[in-house]
Image 1 (cartoon, rainbow, N blue to C red):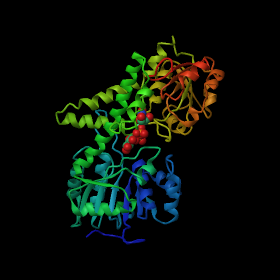
Image 2 (cartoon, rainbow, N blue to C red; image 1 turned 135 degrees about the vertical axis):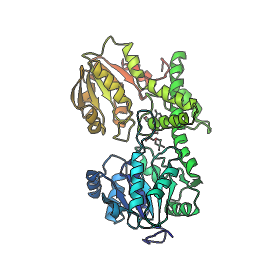
Image 3 (cartoon, helix red, strand yellow; image 1 turned 60 degrees about the horizontal axis):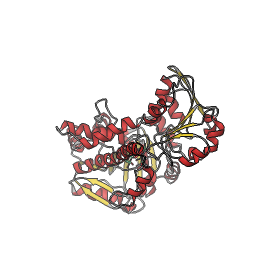
Image 4 (cartoon, rainbow, N blue to C red; image 1 turned 30 degrees about the horizontal axis):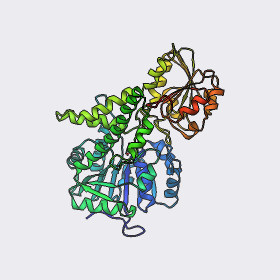
Length: 452
Ligand code: UDX
């Protein structure tokens, strides 16, 4: 049956992982950590060389250690060579990107490329597992595609195995996942995947391929909806002078609601929620269905991202020539990823309006600089600083985009003393209204009671 390499004991498998991004690399180091023999394949030679030398190509807590340990213990390998990666692999996990296209649909070209490559190069029975987030029905197409291009009589099946890791806690979310979702109707595939995941000791939910694909979109869209709902309620709280922090606290005690993802702010960003909500809405549209709830989440989020600019615009005559402190560039703390971060929209607007932006982020600056290199942009200018206090010095206004610990540690007195005009727009509700008032800092946040 399946080609199986016996390693430390009979539970250990020879695994290939295609794509060394968040999904692929994190899965790979975790598989190696629990004892499997893992070869990672990527077309990006620089990334592969970096991994080979034990350096994680992106910041993720715990990743570096696991990468080093996997290499040291001879269970983790990196290559750009297809044959080396697929040789003897009992299971090939696909973790390549499925970026958003202009119409909101997912771009599946990388998945198709890998599927064809597998069909044309694999020489033993093996299971292909799609970890990337793909629209419902994609796994069926991938299996058909593999069959169309397969040259020999070997058995290749395709199963869905979506991941639910969040950036900043990806390693933890993989090793201690709430559940493993396996999507297949083949007993052979289910047994193999169950076996591969057995050492993790986690609950396994076994469903059809299409249900597994839908679980991922439905889970992410639900969380996005939860955030947009709280942002909508926060905006209403401001109008009726209620406090969203108290409202969220009061709601969180109900197990049916839960305490997580209830924080109102400047909207969700990142590589998943924005992309997956749009892809789900697109899928619904393709089937003639209007997915009103998810559409509403997307609409609320789009408006929420620039809510601070609207607040600031009604307070200031102009941004032109003003020194503006921008604190936090990533879409959330604990990651150097700024994809779809609120900082992009806001900073881009400020630069367009002629502001002198002084930006701080503890880890996200090098990535952000690729989009906005230091210097002039349109009518404005951006300078990156390495200390949050340097951004605040003589600033006429401050915007908080990400709730990094280093930013939370800035005191109301710091704002008062360092800024030219102590005027703070907080998109993450990290400061106390009372303390800010006491320090005589003019403070605007999201959905909070004016008195604090
Ligand atoms: C998310 C899901 O959590 C994860 O399960 C899935 O696999 C991928 O997408 P991630 O994008 O890494 O993970 O981050 P998450 O912590 O969920 O935050 C996403 C965005 O929502 C961030 O911009 C964050 O600031 C925002 N957010 C989160 C809120 O605005 N309020 C909250 O209460 C929680």
